[in-house]
Amino acid sequence: MNNILLLGSQSQSRARLLREAKISFSVVGHRADESACDWAGLTFPQIVSKIALTKMKHVNLPEKAQGGDVCFLLTADTLGMTKGGEILGKPTDRADAIEKIKAARNGERACTAFCLDKRVYKFDEWKVAKRIEIVVESEYIFSVPDEWIDRYLEHSLGFQGSAAVAIEAFGDQFLKEVRGSYSAIVGLPMFELRCALDDVGFF
Image (cartoon, rainbow, N blue to C red; front, side, top):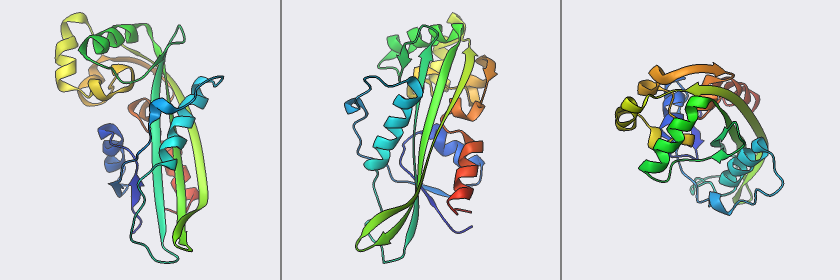
């Protein structure tokens, strides 16, 4: 396998999942303004999917290319939702993180969407040869006791995680229950991604 996946994300969790799966990648980032997305009338999965697609539309593409060159691009987004239907993004500050951590004890939904493109360079621009969009939902109970919150925030990626939840590494010890894809909660559903990469001819 000589192909390299171009990851339009700064997420440390997604990068770790790809490294552990031995998938070669390079971080390229994106210029999307996620807050500008119009969510009106969309379901929870549709919102997450729209953000992932918006990132794809603004991903940083390779500037140097020749006719016939191929690249593989990946963008993704993860959001949480409380049982009451409140959508949760990353915490805005420490107080917000603590509030979100306490709410996760009651159980929440996580939704991750990814957009995978195979593009070919033709006529001086990158053309989409194939696009796959997938959304995966999971449910979990994440229970950090009050006396552990400071340590959790210090040693985990909680400040970077949707709903302040980082179930990997240090956070493993607070994950009480999972129904669905573990890696989707982390930030990238790896089973579905592997199948999609196969489908676009990455391997």
